[in-house]
Amino acid sequence: ASLTDVKSLVDYVYDELSFDLDFVVPFAAISEGGRMIDNIDDRSELAHRLMMTNIVRLLEKSGSDSRPSVVILPLSPNHGVFGGDGLYAESKIGLETLFNK
Image (cartoon, rainbow, N blue to C red; front, side, top):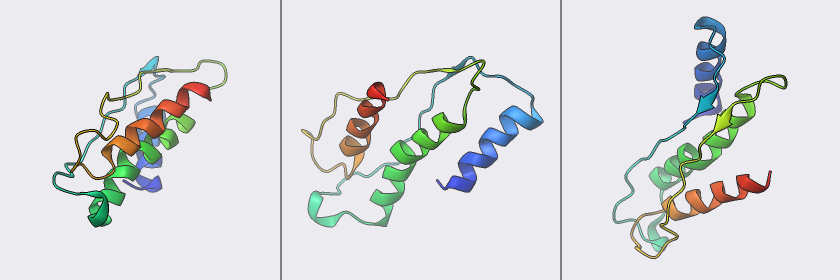
């Protein structure tokens, strides 16, 4: 779930496979079961980076100016009402802001 991982994936798809993607449907999730707001840990940070930050990075590198990709964002109706799910809801709410960019 690093910048290097995202770059390697994009380079593989566009350079080695020579694909030009029409659609991108990114989805990744790491279980954070039982993590409440008072015990956010390194696993929660990793999950947030995977579910939000790296999706933004992937979008930055996908497509081209002449042929952009259509992206279907992995949103969720979970806006923190369930509890005990670490930063899952924050990641999904963060992705909602991409609609305005």
